[in-house]
Length: 354
Image (cartoon, rainbow, N blue to C red; front, side, top):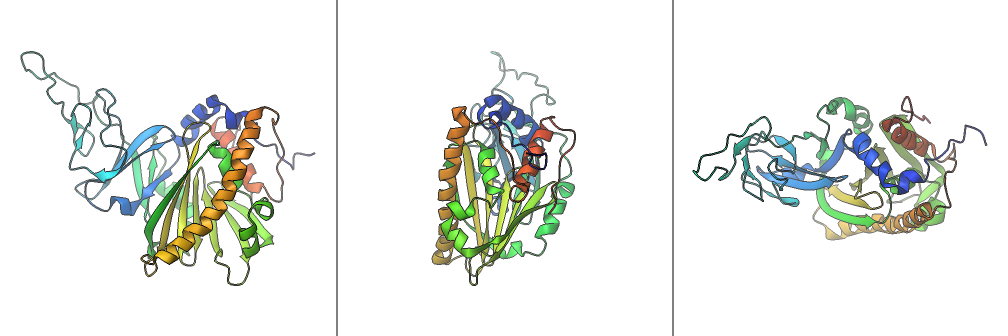
């Protein structure tokens, strides 16, 4: 076997908590991550609060119409400022002890924080504020970056945005969400998404709609890859399937799209979050939406079956490391080497071109 068949990541990257802790710092706290559809933040005060690889975060629409993002952690005693999920906040007040913050994150009032004489304690505003999260919006999707020195979102999204320019994403309306919880490391699922090698064996319905001899995955830039395949006549699977590092899949079809996020919930648990969008004229037709959801659900059922089986085998201790196909698994080479580069295990990231 030659170096033209690169080695996979070692099994320890998928099963050991220390590797996940390393990725929290090197991947999840440095990359622009899609957080939610912008339609969930259409009204002033509207917020979405969720966790990103263990970091509790919320994004809200401020009264002036801007988007603001913060770690959902009060600097007093780590209470939550908003409850997890979606909602509306007239102001930013910790749910635990009532400390109030302005929309810029600064401390407005430490409720009843005086001594016995009722005198307020002198708190340094520079030390008691909500920790900010960078926020940006692109074509109806909201992204966040946890790094205090986040790279420019415009520069980061640029190549991916250029690839998406031919598609009328703004003509789609958000219609539904499906969340699936998987018993596997997040990379086990991403590895599976990044290749079509398994489709003939595991996805019979999808296999019938695609001409698998034409299936390929190209990596035109170090930030994303794209799946391409000719489809059978009349197939509903025709479209584009793009993956942006580290965890975002945008699957675009003639009548809509689903936006798929692969989000770790610990080192051996993963959430796959599907947000479905449909053309405006179809958005109120339950049958059309059901068909879209059913199509992806069948494929996800099949994927869940195999990735959880793979994870059990990775955990068993028999498998250590394998080799990747230069024909079918180029995107895995790209993705896994980016993980290694982020951790400091490689000198430079790798782009694998078609």
